[in-house]
Image (tube, rainbow, N blue to C red; front, top):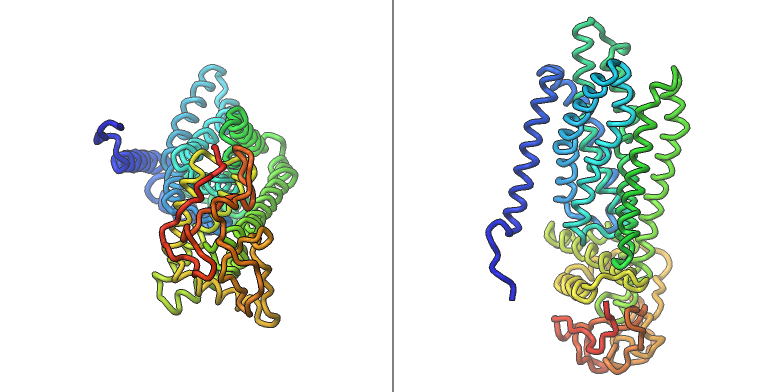
Length: 473
């Protein structure tokens, strides 16, 4: 038996400690930045630095729409980047630069060396800490490359936000002392370079780390070396790209422009393409994995089609909102998220990458789906009809029909078709599988374990698993 849970082991205590830590870091970084920029410079820097933040967060949130993670993860990572990572970077970079200047007696060279060699290592490591924390403690929210890109990108967005306040505030202070103004001022130049030309710089660097963690999340737990090496390689790539960017000013008058056009812009385009392609692959996974659950009666026959289309999902939420209010739209959104997580879970299991809690997690997701089916199914069916206004929707028989155990009352939205009627997925008809292997149509828990031909699916609202489960972890 487990021992008693002490007060310091409770989850709320951990959350309170984390919030307190981030708040203290925020207060300290606020005081440091204000000390270097002055109150007026701080306010100007804050007003200018906040401009790209909504656009960047919205872009990462759009990328995460297939299987949206909870907002609390994004809030935590942004706060970590803006407060904790920024504080670590300012303190460590300042200490290292002063030490190099003292050791070499060359302050100018120390600044260049610190920006090129020290800052990339310190800053990328500080930002990677947030990705590591989510990877370790919010594992169910971190399932692939898109999650890694989103978590890393939002962390870096928070870091760049604080850094931009500092640099823009210092540039404003320089203009105040020199009397500069207009489009040739230091403030305008800093704003153009950091906010207009390269608002994606820090997110671009840290996304390499996120891709490494995302690839590790896709690996089986038994491949421990790979799960350690992939994040390390991603972090090294992030540091290298960051060092190249910081060192571009020392490459001559056109070094910055050369690095921007030769490396930054192509890397940004390549990673953008990779992220969008991965998002489309996730939708394809939904369309390929969910028919097995539709065949077992957990989903409606058209739902693998509608859940695999972002437009159909949006139409379903809008229809539910018009007819059932905000609560209905939220229920449909949760239904879509659970179905997507279920598809990804089964996809990992079919590839031999499922964790030991596969069956428990599958049952949890199916229970969540079943609890929201009355609201979600009509909305998704309406979305499917709206997606095919001209030609009738052609729905193939469920994949289970080829094995002879399709649900008894299955029918497409435009009329019934003849399919064999047998109790779906009884224990004695489950196809055999090798230990550790999850077949595409192997064993699926059923809503109504003792279904009979002619009985409507879902008689028993409590999901019951097939007894001779071949999965062995």
